Amino acid sequence: MFIRRPAKTTQDTAANSALVQDSWLVKLIPPSAKKRWSRWIGRRLPPQEKVTLSHKGIFILPTAFGIAWIALIILLYLFGTNYQNNLVIGLSLLLASVFHTCIIYSYKNLAGLTFNAVKPADAYAGKLHTFPVMLTGHTKQKHHDTTHQQICMQFAGQRHVRLAQTEEQSIATVQYNNPHRGLLTPGRIKVWSTFPLGLFKAWSYVDLNLHQVVFATPIESEAHLVSENNNEQNEITHGKVRPGVDEYTGLRSYVTGESLKQVAWKQWAQDKGMLTKEFNEPEGAPVWLSLAQTSGVDLEEKLSKLSWQVNYLTAKKQIFGLALADKIISQNIGDAHRIECQKAIALFKPQYSMTQGSMNQDSSRPQKSEQNQGANDAR
Image 1: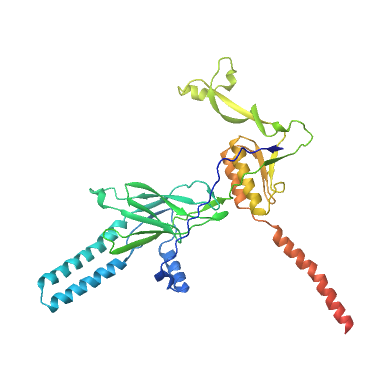
Image 2 (image 1 turned 180 degrees about the horizontal axis):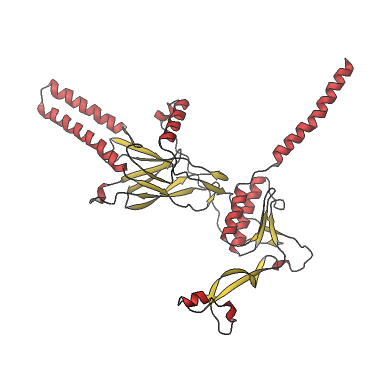
């Protein structure tokens, strides 16, 4: 049976923000050196569910502004010694002391930050996805306004998010643009800051072992439900629910005259009032969403239509099952069933390519043998 979709009112536009390109200085680094650096970071800072930054994983180098600051210090010192001007020499030493002090504050700005991964929302292919990360700062310092400021976080090649100031617990949403269908492993998060004066860049790498199943991009379509019994006339009742005794669905207020067998006596003993247990059972024949029965130009379009149909039927509280080529999910209802179906669609990989390849190889073998036999006969 068919369930007609509602009228389309808005168009979903995928996020088209470009990926962040590496700087010209990073592009000069050979790929072999980058691989060795990545392996060394992986050994020094292994993946953990909870990461606290310390001297072991914080790196500090001067920025372009910091290098210009050093050049200014040297220039002023040479100018003061050449013209024997103590005031200029003193100014150069003052700038040098500020430069040295910024190293300490750059380290203290990152040291002690603790990172924990938070469960992310559903991710869909081709759309901007965010990974929420909880930052926990110092709790025993008197001046909270001077700790953990201008914290930037980003995945490799992605746009960064900046926290102007962190509290004892802050949530940062790290962006990942345009993910593909399947299992997404974004990798390490680069945490960096140029606080306080921009003279130094202090950075570190946080690997929270993040994984996310990216669902197929939903495409609105007709929900084609396949019933096991095609002879029944009242197909509109297939897969619906009605009051019954099979599955427990929740509690509701007690109505006078109802059977006392359905009363939730445990809740009544807890002074929560008279509540009645609700049970439902499926009505009509079981119905399925089938990949084979879904129309589409290619496999990705079919999976995208199935993704939208799963969300739509779940919102309509429709009981349904999912039939893919290599996996069958039995009929159910609810958000847990929706997530299970979406994960099966996202992780689906066609198996026909290998089989077709082996068939082509097997079919080519007799042709080769016939050609060799013909050559032998000719000889």
